[in-house]
Length: 421
Image (cartoon, rainbow, N blue to C red; front, side, top):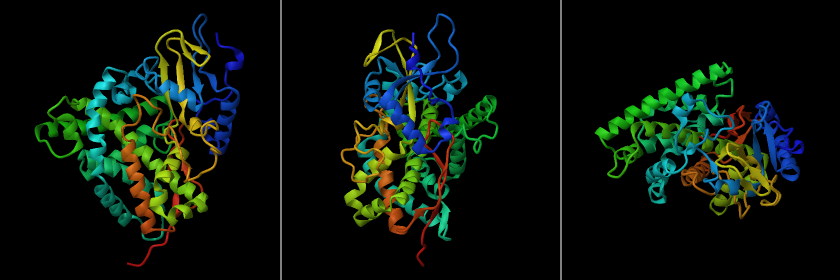
């Protein structure tokens, strides 16, 4: 039985609640951390004699790290990692390592890790610099642009495509398909916001991406090249099947494209809001780069939440007893502003150190594989952006994605001075 005083009045699953300003949402999470850090959010009436429908909202840093470290008690594979159980047809397209438990998770992660070792990524800096330079050359010379469309969204996607060996001709299609899948709750990307309309659009986009990657994987098996697809499907060791490669790609373009692009967009916006922090960083870019990037990651928290499902009766989280099938949702956006961990968490401070944020997930088996790549991209992106356009700034408020999963920015107007060539 769940006590009445444990039931939340904050509808964290309701997209309309997420239309509040970030400051209002942060204040609500601060209240939950203080008064009801483990709060049950009901999702409809319960059947008599059965456990109530809903989830436990975990809002503290300590709880989120604890759950992340106990995959034997808190499963990623039972029903997936979204608040609502995904339909079987969507699990077919999105069931990559993020929605798996061991031993399947361990097997796939071992294979996928080949492409994300520190050694492999250390040689990417030159390629990332070339890509950033190329995108800067393509930016509007009028001195203003939609920063998301002309810079932030292109960089991580182009890096991933280059890493995998995907021809440039597919870039526009992949970007549009990614927006459809991860921006499904926003009418800009899917006009028909009915459950059927969203399901149809996401399925079509997923099938098209899978078809593309299946073709590329089959080609690399027959004709190996020096790219990540070949490393994953045609190495001497155990490999991904073309179908597993296709599913992993959908995860990769989400985790590696959407998240990094949103940190870049949030980064420009918050640096514009806090010019003293921007000026400090520009006074010595290398001196402050590491801590500035970590603070942008904490501030943006591009992935707002993930869910786990309790695997057995009698699981304890602090003094809370949980039962098999109970859902717990880890609100990373709250953990990254937990006052017990971060001094003055509502302050944007590029010198913050230490900064043990959970923008890449908590510790444990599901910590983000692409963390090193994301940090490298952010470092190169802001260094070269400021070198080319030292006065670039956001103008007005960002147009935010309608989502309670991604802290996305769809559009952000920027202005900058174009030097004569």
